[in-house]
Image (cartoon, rainbow, N blue to C red; front, side):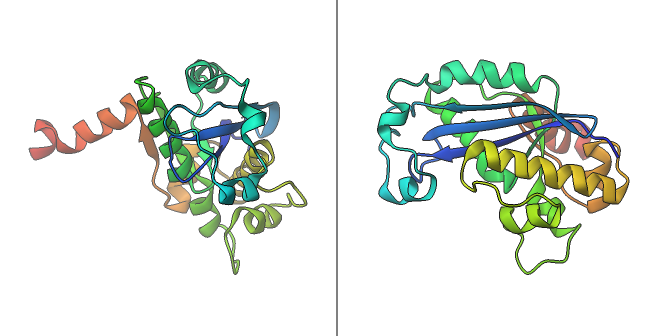
Length: 205
């Protein structure tokens, strides 16, 4: 079934979720990739130190981001690129945590997005020994990609969701989340509204 969403992936300079140094975005409309974007990000102070472990994983070094824009420039672009889309990421808690922490480190409002985790969707769709991105993407017919390249990982994530939606005959992410029993997450104002509905006065009646 044709689904529409934006897949996202981050790489970080170090273990801090506020150290975003690369972002990959893939826009899917009616089950087809229509736009791709990769950008380097200059991590905010004091989260900009590159750990050898992270560099070994993704190959991004300080010189690659030295002249890149900071998150304050990339956040408006993310909002424009995704529009009203739900976001999708593999192990989405990590990527949503990066958005939240990097925004808060700069005193920026956390953007308002709903999201679905492709890792959890894969667990409810495939029978695999591992549900890491490479394994789940291969099950979806998307393999031989540059893992830990933010754009390639976002494309792999998108492929998983498109394939899973077809398998479950789900026409949108809300339906896909329902049939796979995956929780729909939220950040920003969407998360605040969700918490209010659960804990506000009406929730006690």
